[in-house]
Length: 310
Image (cartoon, rainbow, N blue to C red):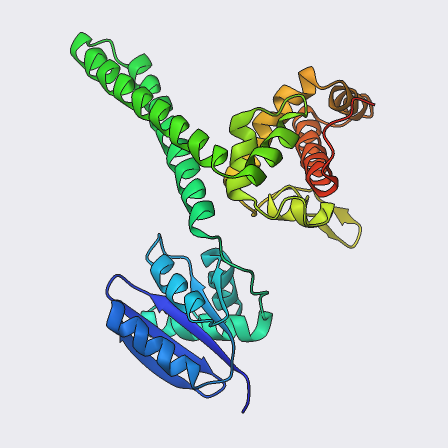
């Protein structure tokens, strides 16, 4: 039987499915019965890969059900799928059309199927994500406090900030317990925090958001974090390089870590100063420090060797 590529568009209450090259168009309910029917149907096909577009969390239960049944499934970046649709000249956007575009995308790209995170890893990722959301809310409230002179509003903001800080402290405790529950995570955290400029928050973000760290090459991890510069060049014209894509939370955290490391890590401080002396802009130098820091952390986990000042 010919290999089939499947696209699944996930909505709140339904699943639109397209199978290529067979051309099947299917619709299932997004509930236990519907997902069981989808799995049963796919088992009768020679499925190469099932593509599911990330859709604000609705896709998680679908992906888990397919993976548990042994169906090869990947979660796709919506921006990549939309860019692919535009390249095809597909401007219309409906659920069946989206399922067709997803199927055509996985058929053309053939994305690598990677094992999904287990329950413990998924919980750590969710806790770290929630912590980041709380920190953002605290920052937003403090900015609002600076913009108002009304005592009532200031008291309201202060009460909310106090409640959010209490929630942040509770989340830190839960993350700490989750890390301590795994000797492997404890060992990795110790290795990562051995690098000057890398604290527990940065280490735990990397453990949660980039579990591949230590198993990939330096160019791969840089691309995964969105720290690989894109060159813009055409004929004799040369534009500025820029970074984009990748895992934004990891990139943001590494940028903060680079600012600290450029001050307190002798090797990275010297690296930044050398770049600036060679004419690089300060922002470009910091991004380069972030990329070099990620490369160092990747090597440390790969070799299971803590930071060596030399």
